Length: 461
Ligand code: GDP
Ligand code: GDP
Image (cartoon, rainbow, N blue to C red; front, side):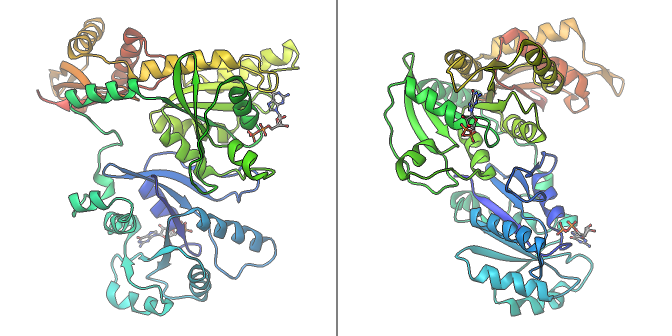
């Protein structure tokens, strides 16, 4: 579903620049997970309605020695997980030995590779790029990442097998930088249909977390308690396993990133942790169950996974695992730390559990249900407009250009996450503080718990 695009090339060709361009303000997930090189970065990107994952594989120049070789191997391993490789070279520097070494490696792999000549701004690009044909990688795609030139066209080409219809519909998509943010807006009627669909579907619940936090233990615990019908989805190790299950009369599909089912089947010892698998699981889920290890505290990686979940608009429940065998003092200390570091997500329920002993696992599902209900609960125009008016009555929007910013009415623009579309005059000038105020007002009034909520502003009627 979500294609993975890897950026490969020697240092300094512009991989980070392109990565930042593609992922824009979204947080990059810097992968210092054990066993992965530290400078590999993962990000989400979007062209039109089509989302994809971008991996900056870090610098490799093909001439590494010693410890560098190990790191380069890991960068090259990232290529394995990719659907498409963008092999970047520097149009100003010309062809180098390192480029040739990387090309040789890429040729030995069965991958779809696009040769990309960057920094074509301000030079005679056609003649500068001529020599790159010697790499034997076919067409040379010219871009200027720093100038945001040629990128959309390139991505459209690269993703074509995945998004054929989209390309057919949008032969001249806008440059990435000029897009709005990442919300797909539905009309009122479509939003209503979407909510109904979601309410009739099984809840897709992804269990995610860093290695060793207890995901497999928790998955087994949940499955052990339930009557489970398992079906096997074909897939590679970078895909999660989907496990349908039922609980309290509600249907679920567990998205198992730890590979419990697969492991049981092929007697494999440990599933390889894959960031891409986790990101895909988040995208595919309705509700994310982020598992963290009470004994490790909150790490930057936990925060990154959280950031991805919020960016994707998924409902969220947090399980603090390994709560067994801790003294009260230690527990108090951990809670203070969680408060301090997770204070910014005020809507997600926090559960203290022991997957090993099964303590607290049942209650998780109460919060999962609540989060899903919040994410899919329908709100009609009259309610949304009424809440908006109450918010305005309590606290007027500020003036702009000598006139007061006016909010007129609101309607639903989608669910999971709930999106409220607010129409008004001069809404572009609304300060962030007011937007936040309105969002919190909606959250409280509509009692939305466990799901992020988004507000989109539209000028005029
Ligand atoms: P990386 O090591 O491959 O990640 O390369 P960076 O993204 O850090 O870029 C290396 C240098 O090239 C930086 O100084 C960038 O500003 C510059 N650069 C990147 N893209 C372009 C471009 O399109 N045109 C020009 N002129 N410079 C660029
Ligand atoms: P995963 O990599 O996230 O799937 O983690 P595992 O489920 O494989 O667990 C990693 C280690 O933590 C194993 O040794 C588990 O026995 C242990 N573990 C998991 N859950 C708990 C728990 O609730 N309490 C304690 N004390 N250990 C746990």
